[in-house]
Image (cartoon, rainbow, N blue to C red; front, side):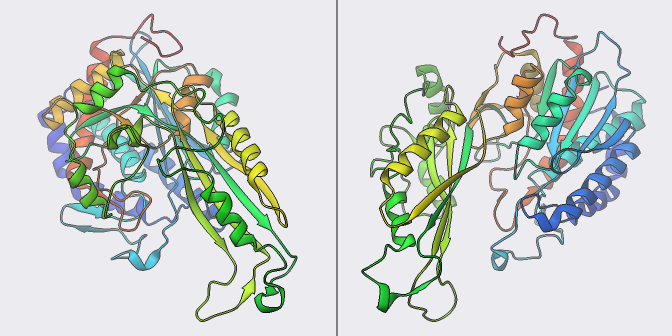
Length: 472
């Protein structure tokens, strides 16, 4: 079977409206894993997804408990022992929607406009999950069988906490045998050019709590005599990075590997325009670590950023106080050889050392995950490249993504599987931001690409001898 087989294409064309209606149903569920009040919505999304998999023809569909939101598992294992077995991963949980006033339509009321599906999760990652389910249904409906064995693992905590899935993988490792994991949670390169992500940065996220007096104090009566927690927090944050973009935490760069000359050459060859990127982002100037290009800073160098800061009076008007507390969330993106636990320790020690007197500073680690690299010449990467060429009409670029997908290293370290990052979202999808959207041309062609990917992988046979550590 090929993705251009007439019966396959005719089926997809005939069912397009029905498929988009189902896609929109999925998007209407506000499955925000980071907000506890949406726990029931996350479970509703898992239930919806399990039903969709059953309808598509998957077997052994189950909703399985974790320490967080459930995992949806399903499989189809009739291609035979000589065919490759693939784990397909995605996540049904989504990011919070604030600031709500910047959305041009309600985030959980999906709308199709200018060739795009707009809603929270349209791209990240419900759209990519749904195109995999659609591909499964179309293949089984038109051919009755798949050329590879598939296991589907769809989680509900990717946007909030990697620990529930990691625990589930460890507990279920014996029944998750496979040769490779395919993750569709990445996207195309600038200009909407087909791409395969070969490198992901890791991350570590901390929360810093600064406590002063037990209650807010009158700034006239007490100002100048007690430390202001917001002032203290501002000094701590200012001491984390220098004007050259370098992180000032001692030891932060000790274990950084690369970028190598080959890495830099590959990045330099990508069709990227700094000025166009600056204009698209909407900032007056691009900044970052001195000595590295924009793309190198975006995907090959570690970073430290403050993701949120709050405390004190934030209403309309004036309330002259010294607040009792101030808070910040800080994340670091990590590159090969950087260990999240060690970076967290270094950050905690440094923040403790620079904290001013008069306040109590508490640091809590929220989560972390190591970086991931994928060999370009692994048989599954080669199959993905061939599938993209056959369906999207051009050779893919190989890119380093600045974001993190914790499960990538979980598949590598827990299950011993190489990972292929085959994603389809356009670079301007506004993932994690207002007006998130998915280009429907990417979505529809992505269905064809997935079908072609299974064919390409099967034509190479089961990748015997592939090292279990994913090297090539």
